[in-house]
Length: 391
Image (cartoon, rainbow, N blue to C red; front, side, top):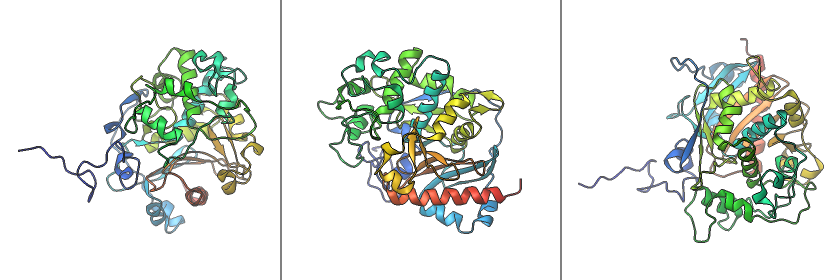
């Protein structure tokens, strides 16, 4: 008798999702929590901590202060949400079939973890934001990134010919997905991400305009590897993840050349992701131990060049917003800033209420202005409601 595996999703065709379809709705609902079954991954190790029975705080108290919250979470395709105020989890909610110990793909929230990792190296004097990328990665001389400064890469103000249209098969972002092992390869694709990055070109007019480009984060990861002598996953473990007091290992996808997909390939639990937001909220300190300098955090949350981001969809949602060190800064009166990944992955930090929200989602669309508005409103209301709860 032939061994036939059942569909992974109710009503899905046999064999779905595939490498071609796993990022598309409705398959992403399942696939984002099972990335390692599609793409090779490497661990980002944590420091061992004492385990214990898994306890879920729940969301009842928060919903009492914010009626209709659960329905709004369901309508926004929430897989998990964790709300932390003053360092304590005050609410958490998981969709059916998703547990607190389950890891979930972060997509571009991964970029913000890279920014923090780079920050630790700047703090130690290993990296200088004003130096050119080619001085750290000679193989990128002649590429769009070779004559850009590290800070321009961090702030995504590099002039580069790169189409970030996730639905366009001819886009550079899809080409990078293929090279990373996220989509089926085509003839002529570069062998790995190292080779792909070296092919990118631009006009060299850096620093003038914000241009969101996922490849920028992978350039930063290559820099990290060259100056530390470590694989990127090991560098993130050593300099960030192992110091956060995480409950679980994270993981990151790797391509055939061993390059870790820094721009979007990390998966972790929602609780552990909230620790990254708490690190930022506490000025770079965890349990009295400094991980990244207060200066780096302060420069990040002050934001980047607002004029460079003029006319972007981001500023249509956040008129005074900017991008800095791989984080989005709203420029609002509350001082909110956040990390975000396509299909609805978030770390939202609200200094005014000392609240962090980590959210996993599986939106049908990669990203829209509507979804960004919905979540900015949702997170601000959640933070205000969390501030009303008695500890």
